[in-house]
Image 1 (cartoon, rainbow, N blue to C red):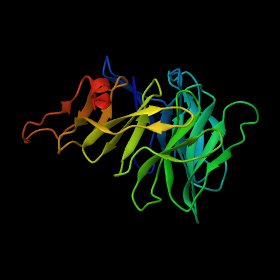
Image 2: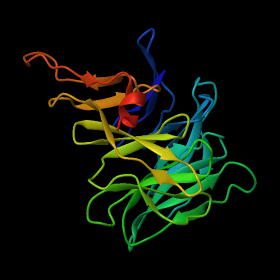
Image 3: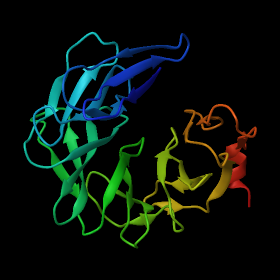
Image 4: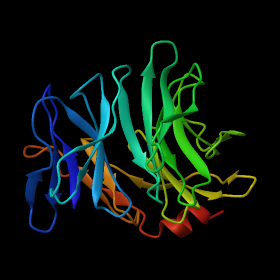
Length: 253
C-alpha cells in the first residue's frame, strides 16, 4: 500500500493499493490535509490539516473504517508531521515560529498527549525521525547555511553528531538502526552508524544514482530498489543505477 496527498487549497489523503492499482480517499471535506505518516503497524495515518487553525494534527484509519480523530488542536502555529516512532509512542512534527523558523516537537500518544519541545535553535530544523531503538533523533538543519543531517540523543537532546557534511535533501534510518540513508541532488548514499554510546558515523558510500530527468524517487523498505517518476513520452530512455548489495558497498574500504 502507498499513501499520497492531493495538493491545493482543498486536499485529501488517499491510499493506493499497489497490487490492484485502486485508490481511495481517507479524508474529505474542506481544508488541506497533507504530510501523511504511517503508524508502525500500518493501521493508521497521521497528517497535518488546517481544518480548525493554521495547521493541526489528525489521525485516520488506513483502512478507511473510521472518521478523522484530532490528535493535536491549537490555533497558533503552522505544523507539519514528519514521522511516527517505531514503537508507536510518539509523532515527530515541526512547528513554524516567527523568530526561530521550524522547531522540532514531540507528540506523545499516551498519557495527557501534551506536546513537548525537542529542539529549538535559530536555525531551521525539520525531517525529524527517531531511531528504531528509540535512543536517537535524526533531523535536518541549515545551521551552517546548507541543509545537513544531524543526530542527537532522544528523548533529551545532547551531543550533536553530523551524518552529512556536504549537503543533504532528506534521509532515513535503516530498519536495523545501524545504517542511515540520505539523498543529495540525484545521488543516494548509505552510512554505517554505531548507536553507542558514543554515537559513531562511518564514511558515506554511493549506493545509487537517479536519472537526471526524474521527477521524484522513493526507496523500497529494503533499500535494494527504488521507484522513480519519469516524464511520459517524447523523452530519451533513462535508466536507474542501483547497487543491489548496498550493505557490502557501504562497508567497503
